[in-house]
Length: 620
Image 1 (cartoon, rainbow, N blue to C red):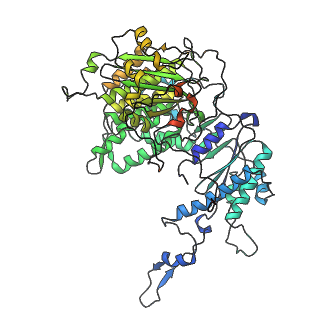
Image 2: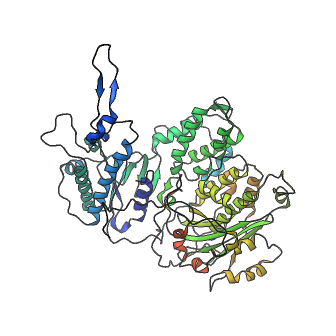
């Protein structure tokens, strides 16, 4: 089982479901007495015996568990094996169109009218909560994101039948279905699969044994179908296609932020770990939030006698969370902002002590904005002299800016170039760099530091939140990055001369378009390189309108990637990061080849598909 990716799989299934069959309906089935339904092997029972204390002279009292005990390290994986089996059986029967016989609990669940969870209409308005967002952010609240797109992503595949799917997270079964008759079938098949693995009640059972399906949760409406449901702690709305924090978690976020006033200088390590844990758990439904943790993580490196110092950078990060919270009711998270699909563009960027530059290759379905067409886009920026003077070199070992910092700054400008040239709202884009520090900073979204990377990564999050795209980052060996290498260094050449020198590296029948960074975004990036903080609106530059564009027929979507990289390395062997001169392939950069770019990723995002439904030994 791949713990932690059930939500990724569910969001993916919702997004790729064909709207022609209607909105996706959601339901949950909870188990009652979960661990206690798994019997132990007879030979293993003595190994888990517990000796109880007795009075002197009394016989020893030893308790032997007959079922999985709570607190035993092996209980969760053993139990999850059983629940995974239920999900596998249900999905296999759904795929094979096995008829669904009646189930008594299905009729009972059908009689329950579901009560939709309250969407973020808080018990107390945000204005009355103990929270005071800084007035310096007030102007940014009116433009924290571009409008949502009105057209479905053309890279999404068309489905031939209504969605019918079951997933599992420990003991929570999650059903997804389209069409009413199909939803009844999914619920019946799931309930029968539960009975096949966890024995239902029969006439021999005593009064204390319960049905494996929790009747309490069933009567509360969990097993009833609805387009709005709390799934794994998130409110998912399949009509508006959003995922949001429940009201009580929004109020908890406000409580956390109000409990740490700007005048507070220290807090306990224990409280700070709790704050970081809760904020990270909420960051999925808060676009841009996962890039705000660098300063807060760094505070733990300077703890003294169980206390953590809250410096200016920490309070600035908390201010950013207040900025996000103040607009949380007006800016729900769209599911399409979290689920990576086929690549809509692939870009290569580079930076040097002289400047930065990059190139984007769009897919044939990507819509250009006014002033642009569906051809590669190039850009470059020469660093000011005072930035170059701060670069760490052998002659300037005390500099404050490293080459990796410049590469990271170039990566942000690179994404701005694409967002201003093409309509990348809710589209997946792949950006490649030849600097490994930059790559893994971008992948993680944070760095345990208070220096330049922390300031730049914050801007990455604000930029993504505003433009609503799904970023992916990968490595491209330096010798295989000729276009970006020239753009970041050959400033003695005019644009015409430089573009002409790059003709051999462009797909046939294409020409380069030039994008020039605006003064506002350059100022924001330079300020981050100088470790100076700017208000979020400095980076919120509204792009031009999309042009009328006839979509090409897209290829099958790449759907097997989670929303964030795996925290731990997978056992899968990935391509090495060694230098190579053969990674730049024109055939992979044509408009038709770009959608499959995620299939060539080197970074360990891993696949989120559940294990293969093949049981037992295979014959040769």
